[in-house]
Image (cartoon, rainbow, N blue to C red; front, side, top):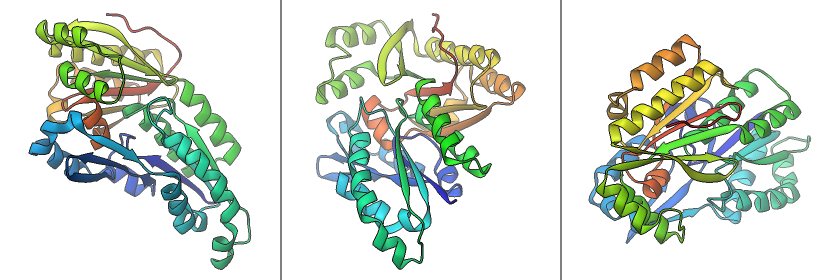
Length: 314
């Protein structure tokens, strides 16, 4: 059976990994003033955006995920012919309509695909499963990497589905934002009141950096640490602790809102890489998606992995 994989562009994995493993991207369009940019997991295009004057107005950006009709077209024009079964992994539905759009599109696709497959000489049925990763950014990457591993290992559809759905509820994503005032402006523009003006102002004045946590679609602060270096050092040290305790998959994903060389110079990074090497955990690094950077600000650091429940200790 030919099994395919689809992710949206908020999934933080390098473009080379996505291309090498034939992963289809559902782009998210970013509109800032008169400029319209399609986020297709192109690191160079993302970095050019980051360094351009447009990035200064990022808090005003409008992000537009693929509509039901656009998702339908992607599948009917290509995927129903190339594959027999497709898993579509989306950013948490609590933060984006992509999951709901893909789910609605799946009903139309399963009603309309037969003429396309018949014309291509395929008589077997086509199936599609939309899975909410219940995560975002680097956290989404964990589930996608595991899907690739299982597909390449020749695992069956039922086993892959059960594994991915289990990982979705056990994926943990942590982020340290660089600029609280930017994050507050962005959340306000989206109608999200999770970062108040007072907390953003006080945090900026005192150089307090929160550690934000996402699991099962819920996002909340789990720590407040004074100083950027101290916050990222703590996050990396926590990553070392979790890796040594044992992860559910041999995967740890990192994404950064800037050049990866900058991330690799952050305090605590080398220790995390050493711990992953010793535990035979593969590290997947990527420039944060354009969508992610617009939403949380440049310079933000994100770490994702799958493990048993735990607490982040300051």
